[in-house]
Length: 272
Image 1 (spheres, rainbow, N blue to C red):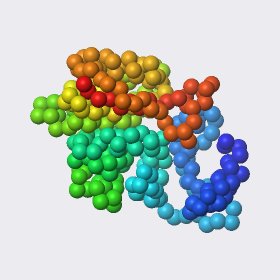
Image 2: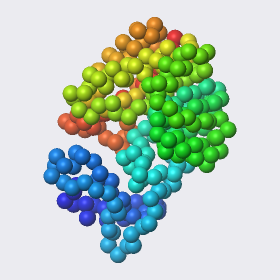
Image 3: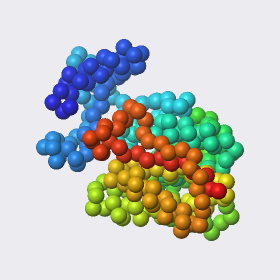
Image 4: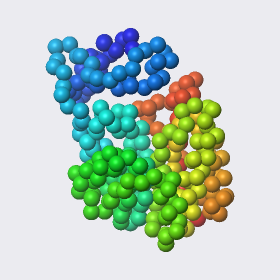
């Protein structure tokens, strides 16, 4: 890919424009340490397209599931938005009507916004990053959803135990954490972290409440993730009814033979 990107990026812009998309330029986010293992340099910036000026913007507006987002592709996490959860967000929206929702690790508010658009009575979006929370708050305002959605800067690992000391506030909890492990040697610690937040969420939910939970680390395999969920449910003293088991969108294909591509586990449960 690195060797042919000069041809590839030009054709990418050409194909997208022929599809009716407005393409201002191609921005590379090659600021990841893994490139060093392949002998490639790290960096980020605009790739020069032949005969075209270099853009001066750092963000762009996108629409997904009818919701408008401002995506900071220069300073945001990875490319500023996680497109692989598109249909999982739709699944959450279908269950959200009339619910009081807690969206943990909200990033720029995507699951929270889909829940709010789906008719949730109220949504609380939580992230440890002040910048992410500010983005989520602005996205809620832009979509006219700020009346049913509030955004809170907090550490989810601290917040969930604090909520246990209060009367039940939420009947739908969404857990979309970042990858807790990026190597095999830290997988055990990661599974402990996954169990902690899932156990806490299960304890908080009333009977009939919903839980959406996922992992985006391929090292946390489906087998390990399911095993963790069973253990968390047992310790929380709850029974789970599985509604759906999902993966990433088809435009993030799973290649049988490249195990890293099978990374996203997404489950919807009801506490019964």
